[in-house]
Length: 105
Image (cartoon, rainbow, N blue to C red):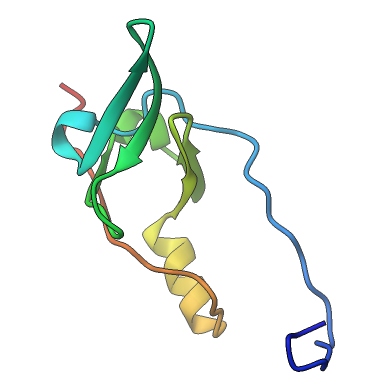
């Protein structure tokens, strides 16, 4: 039910990310803050509302949808999936450009 009391018709689906990429984000090339707990990475925090994220090409190879274990609120889609979402008129998401690293070094 919407705030105005109306309801939406048709099929609706809830997406909940459950499979996270290990070592996906390259912190030194991204606008994130690495947060530690007892000398171990606990999570990442975005430095801005639309941070530049650089991803390991190896870690995300072949995926069309992913999120990093340490930045779970950032669901990322491939260029191909993004183009298909736009072509189908999907709305309700914030598109922020991410990049794949030329090398993982």
